[in-house]
Length: 130
Length: 293
Image 1 (cartoon, rainbow over the protein chains, first blue to last red):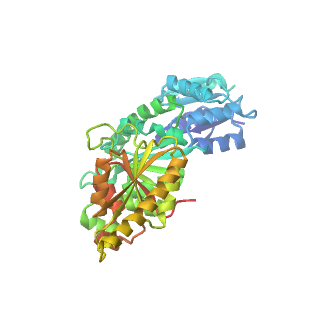
Image 2 (image 1 turned 90 degrees about the horizontal axis):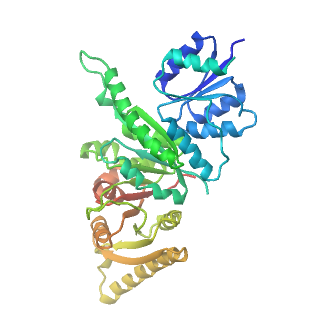
Image 3 (image 1 turned 120 degrees about the vertical axis):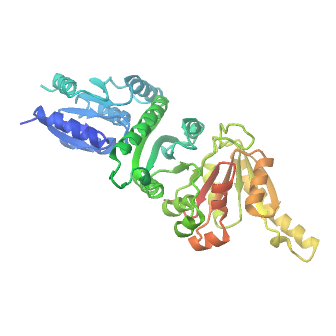
């Protein structure tokens, strides 16, 4: 049975691109368009990996990542951030939230800044999904 | 304190990142989530004879807005804020209304969008329409004050305009939500000339005294919360006098209630909220008749 990969992104072009890469590499793509529905889907489907954008409506990838890593049932799912937001900003924002009293969270499994080459995306996913 | 959401509507004309940054004091009042909205107006990408729908133009405009929003979002994320963004094609007003509903925002911040008279007759004022259709307060923001100074803390010294209608209590209660960032309020009532056309000086003095007493009662509510407050009674045309009071008292914004007049009545009789939103040199915070639950 093919492994499920959840993509959380609001950009329709990116969704088409990622879906194609995933299907061509034998994965089953799951799609959510914001952090809120991404979290619901992650809880329901328990995917093998999550590809997560940062700047999205309703709930950003920063908050969704924090919720994933604070949930005992989801915290071990590898998360690859795929975003136009710089890695430095992502890490600093997590530090800022920790300073405001939240628990510290580990760094993401990988961080890819958009745009991404299909080969690089497939290779990065394969490193975490055996 | 609950996290509150602010919708920042920008067409990249009046409102830029420095304007947004000046509103970051709102964090002390619980606003921790900013949602950006940029609307690519349909006529910029609409069907053209021989060219069809300008898809390439849409992609270009989307990417320009996206680059700006990413830059702004990075600054806010690093300050520990939550940020979201919408870049959509359509008409501004319906897109604002749908985003307010989708995101359940607590405050809309927008620039001045003025419609032509004929368009207004059919569609009403854009700001008043947002108030009417979303029941959400709207801040029509102007980053530069008439004095030429940058408005670094718009909530620091607001002028609160009260007309003693049912909305008075709601406006005062709403403004008390911002007590952490308000230093002083200037409470103003404008009495019309007609109101003072009494037969004797005594009657006019009685009207003055009654208004003054109401103003002082409102001031006391702010003072109890540790906010300095001063009452002022002006006489004349409401918008003109509010503008004059705002300049004299060096306020940082004008706050007023928005009444639910019909579009036709609003068009012929005018509407204080609409006039302030469109013509005041100061930022204008308009509080709707019925607030959302």
